[in-house]
Length: 131
Image 1: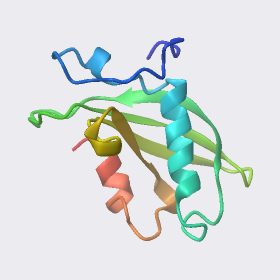
Image 2 (image 1 turned 90 degrees about the vertical axis):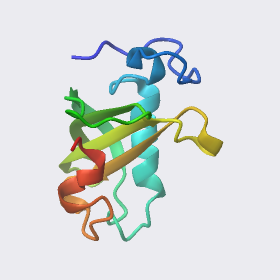
Image 3 (image 1 turned 45 degrees about the horizontal axis):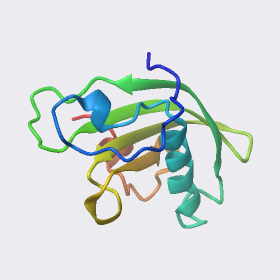
């Protein structure tokens, strides 16, 4: 299980070196959870039915891609999101390096599996899960 978020959680991550723990924040980092909630909040209101994420619990990192070679580091995570309508839904998200504004820092792609009605993230959120 990942360690709690550190105080310097909002630092910019660069891809110098090969230690992924220094290249991407943990799944449980407050900045990552905020980015996941923001991704859902920015979606079209009819996409998730106006629901927003209030909190994410039971967060765990999903094993990394097996044999998939890529110069871009990715961290795959899952958890249970408490939504604004009072329901709990599975959330899958990927933290990806060099995917932020103009390729700096990291970005998050998040998917609420049962609510991805248009399959924006593929079948059963496949783009936010390891292959």
